[in-house]
View 1: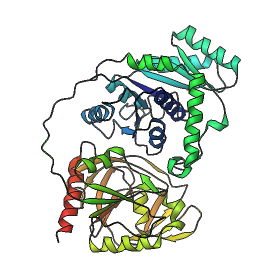
View 2: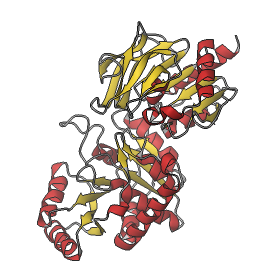
View 3: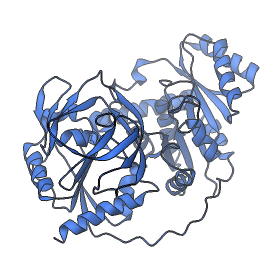
View 4: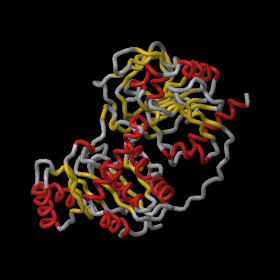
Length: 456
């Protein structure tokens, strides 16, 4: 299969990849093209902006969590009807979890997809030095860098000097220059960009501003030409999948300003399996929907704990204690605790099914990939299974009494540095975020539990 595609990477984190990728996506969409966006790595924030910019759900591609076949399948699945695919990288081109390995890096994904790269370079304080930066990237692992975009320029003279140095010395075309301008930036906080759900109309206005900058300062035709120069994707080994059982179940998914960290693939797999997803709001609503199970993703309970609907919390506690299958990740784990110590230093009531206080602390930063083994039966995975995921939180649990753990970790911190995944009633709650592409078995097990509970 041939899909025009391009990777937007950078010389370092904070170069403006998201702004540029979103601006390009919106500009191409305005040209009438169907644009499919992807984000390299375990990120829930940038994909929200890419989704808004393109009008299509952004999808994560992670070469550390996913095997090559699964990554290629997801890329083909979500871009098969698109005119062009834009893949935003993570950090710099080569950065990964291990400084001496490329697995998990933008480069590894670009290489697997045989996709050309546009390198975004932060040129603050340099001109000829920018050529040295680009030279370093082009010479290290022989990447297919087909163009450069200069960001944070401080005027026409600065742009011309830098552009001349790169094009004359390296024979790589500079296809755009972006001025340093504060109005182009997004508000940041402890987990990254402020979410689209919180910014509302402001996010749309920001993306339109990015589009205007891209259209006026970047050669869009060059972007299209580079993307269209790509060849066929690597062939995927044809595997005959067993016919999937269609589940007649309904799942309530928490989705609001506090909880909105979900992988696109995870919700789509549930739908593909036949599950009906019903979103509910932990802040603005007073009643839970009538469903067979609950899913509570990550987010910012430390910011919105004061606004949680007491009725929703009480009803959810009752449902969990009755045995409704429930799966919660990170922020969802915090929400299910007895109390939450918020960012404002105040204590707030949680759902109350986990005997612990979730404490937010900016000095406690747990970020990275997770590898583990299932040591306790739960609604998601059977004992003995191994898994990979990621964690990203500024909180920890002060546990009161004994708890039963589902996971033993060989990498990552989890809840106590060794374990993650608290099991209570028919509920699993963990700091680890899981991507279920290539692992439908786990979600099938969850839905099987929903049916089993309903039939009691």
